[in-house]
Image (tube, rainbow, N blue to C red; front, side, top):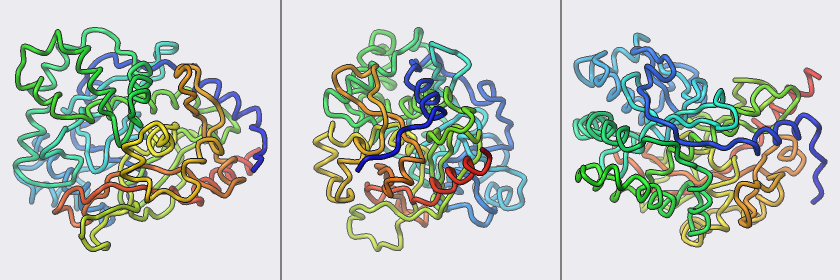
Length: 398
């Protein structure tokens, strides 16, 4: 299939994207980094239509965050404060933050700061990856998660901030990962191992922190989510461009943003990803959730499955028939920063509408009731409606 050439606006947006060189610069508390108030919590994907529509896993995480911020004495009181609107939930990406699955960000939590070395005004943030065990992203609400998040944003964050004393080149880490079989979303083992190797001299004295890093093969993921958000920030505001600059889901609604309409979400209902639920009934599977979709629309994750034999073996069954051909079809440019790997990047909603094919996303599947956590992993294909809406909006304004 031959797709139409990119228009000048899309070319301009892609030039800006490919010029970005994201680095991990520091750790900052959300209140300091983005001016987040105590009564506001940030979640993945577009905004919820109403308080009643907040999906259970995100609601559970919000209750944890409310107790951490001392907005409520316990989880029951936190739920009541959410219901009455005393505590506000807002889309993280509207604040330049990306957060995984059901994880919620609050003002006292530490965020990775990722900066474009070519233009430091382009920044993005992500919370620290919760590792294995009682992580907030899984949507539980219990004392184990509360204790873990307090440790993560207390002793561990302080140790990590002390160890991170100079810029870390995130494209170099991602390229290393791809060369070693990562896809930079569902599998980040090689990139994480290399990052830990770089941090080792400054963190090895802290046995607990080093063990957490060694036991968490996905630690790099949140950093790479922020890197992708930072990369796209360079294109935001390009008049007339339909290049995708954000993607995410909240368990009920899936959405994208494009360069030409700053901050506007184009949405559709979020179906569950296709995957193995381990025998759990299908109606327990929550709709697609998480801001990590931004990694895949940037050209990684399921859109880079050919780099990762392990991901292909585990999730290839759930890919559409032409899934491995989608990067060549939909991603417009080869990124020069990835050398001989030939990594493709640059997703235009115009190409998606013209082709009739949409990008694929590698996602965890959560329990809709917020009781069983992660049910499995799968593949989510973003519906076509948001891309069509985006193109129509841009065309109507020209």
